[in-house]
Length: 65
Image 1 (cartoon, rainbow, N blue to C red):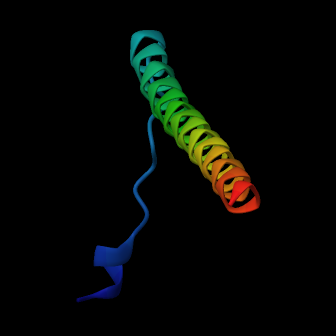
Image 2: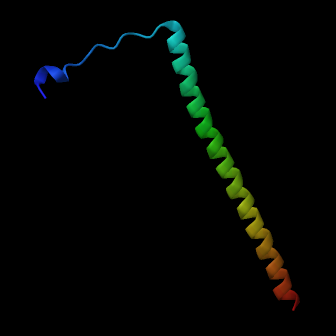
């Protein structure tokens, strides 16, 4: 490749409708990541609660024997 092929092309500013669409796309990505994180957090909390309940039940069974 030649040097002139690497020339930086100027980026034109977005029109207001294009900027709005771009912003909405970025918001959608952020909200999707936040939603996934929240779902994962809730799954972990539910799993921890189930483990604690099972451990407590097991302890009650062992102490009762």
